[in-house]
Image (cartoon, rainbow, N blue to C red; front, side, top):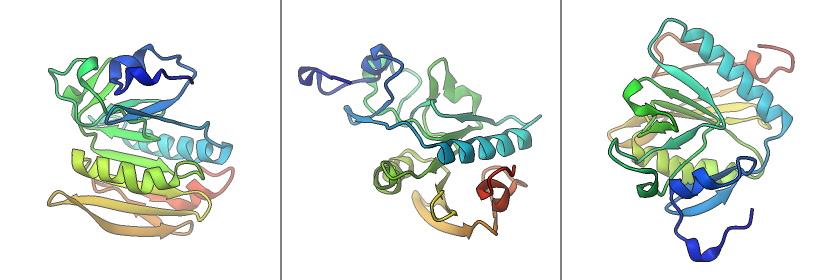
Length: 193
C-alpha cells in the first residue's frame, strides 16, 4: 500500500478510505501494515471464537473476529477524523452495547485475544499490550501457536497483572466471562474444537 507521506499523521477517516484488501492498524496517526495470517493462526482464531460465541448465547456480551476495528481511545462524540489509533485484534469481546457502532468498537473492549505470528510477535507483546493497558481493556490474552501457550493478563489498578500461563494440556478461564473455561487441547490440536 503506497501511502503519501504528506498526509501524515493519518486518522480513522483515512483508514476508511483505503482499499479494503489492505489491512493496517493506526497508532498515533502512523499506519502499521498487517500481513496475511497463516493457516494455523486462522484455525486457532476460529476455534476460540466458536467456543466464546457458543458460551455467549443468550448473554449480553458479543464476540468479534478480525477484521474488526477497535478505536480504544475514542469517545462517543469523536468523528473518524478525530481518531488517530485504530487496532484490529484477532478476537474482541464487548459487553457494553453502547461501545458498538457501525465501524466496530469505540472505547476499550472488555477482552482481547491476540494470536502471535512471526510478523506480529513484538507488536502484540509490547506495543498493543501497552495500548490495551492504557485504554483499560479488562483482560488480554496472548496465544502463541508455535509454543502452544496462552498468557492471561488482567487489569488491576490500571496495570496488567499476569494471572495465568497455560500450555496445550491446560485449561484457562476468563475473568470477564464468568464460567467460561477453555480446554486448550481443543484449541491447539488440529481437528479438535
